[in-house]
Figure (tube, helix red, strand yellow):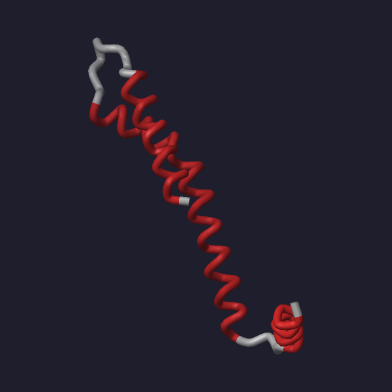
Length: 80
């Protein structure tokens, strides 16, 4: 327990340096890219469906889009 208090005291006494701001910017960019990725997946899968499965007489393959969206969501949760 005393070792942990020593670490906390050292962190409290440390001055703000350049790498603190670098860490804040990097963490903010990571949060932004993850949020953007989650937001844009549904739009991208719909565009892919229109590009690769376009046929004026054929109905949209909702099952293929659903499977693709589910696989992307599983991949995102595994990535985290």
